[in-house]
Image (cartoon, rainbow, N blue to C red; front, side, top):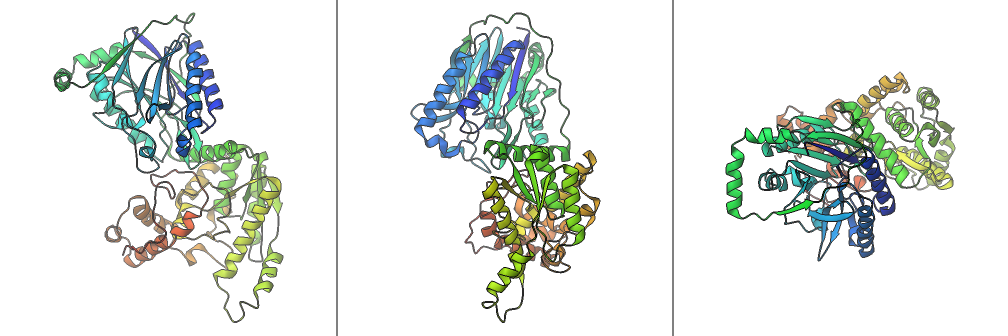
Length: 577
């Protein structure tokens, strides 16, 4: 076979919905067969969805996963498929089944189990030990699972060098973070060139709780060149024709391989070779293959990640509509835009809840935004409720000066109002706080933090502005006054965020150094930041862990998000600075 037609299915798997996932896989196999594909690969744990977490401790779930694989195998007549599932023997394994013409012919067990950041695979899986290569009509290929490809001397090294694999199929459930694709590209290009082979990388797409998967499946040639690039955040079967001869040409010019192979043979590295019988070819072979997508665009990829994560959280949890509190500020405006783009404006309800401190400008901006987006818009004043609370507490608070208690009452009344609407109408509440606010605790428990999903939970305030301007370049729906107005919670007369916090353009770089890079107080100051300010910011971050622990889930877009990534004790006496 001089030309291999490869299919990579960027699949939006639903965790725990084995029936739906199986049907999706079978439809994709049928499409691949109709498009003349020889081998089609699906993402890591495509049958169960990723991450299944403690579902893996349920014996019935594991049994149903195995039966689902049997159904998939029955649908592979005339084609080869690589499908992620959970293999069960004396232990359980994160596995890839190689299915050929109706039969499971081999199973690769993931060798490298990540146990950092958002991953805890060591909690569930046993690492694999065997190396396998498969040969079909003159093409030899190996299979790896996600983390396996990140190690220079991982399975791909053995499969390509000792097994002669010309193609490495790496199936993945690799979560998105901003800019990660460029680092991943470099790694895959290096792995392909080091092993003088074609590396095909297929990834999940879609949202799962706080994680979002970007797809962006890739194929690299034996000299590290990009042969194909799939789209981001779109479920799709990618079809690409691979000229296998390019591998031989690359290997003939690389004398290192012969010496490395001799050393590996001398070490007695075990390798199993599996030959696949020729398939009955499909009648004809359509000429059309997939178009190569352009490299990602920075703000566009982040915005689409937020849209995808929000859409799938709502859809996969069975909600029809969402509700957003619209303050006239930039955070709620951006959340409303993301929700409308994710679900359609007819499924988004905007609610403004003015008090005596709400300015005509912010109230007007909220209404203009709702009209431009086409949202259903409700006005529910809260001043009478605020005054009722004040009267109720007047005796207890006698002799006390007004402080943030009275301010937080307003936020909690708004949160209660949104939750009442949620209870009555089944609307899912989207909160509007950003990462900068959550970092320093500039948020009210059971107030503006009340809700089901925090769209901007991992988005720093400075990025909120950039994303708002990006969205307005597509269609100017956010009022310019919302973007230009100094941020304010409007909980007291003339209030601005800078009354309590440094300017966000000063705050966010400090937060990035401390939260995402784990820099020390001394290191941050050495980079030119004011020592007193750094000490104050770090103290605010450290004191606010209890709030973050009670925050709703939200889309992860940075390398280190609060929640799954950054795990600190609430009761903790350690302090920087």
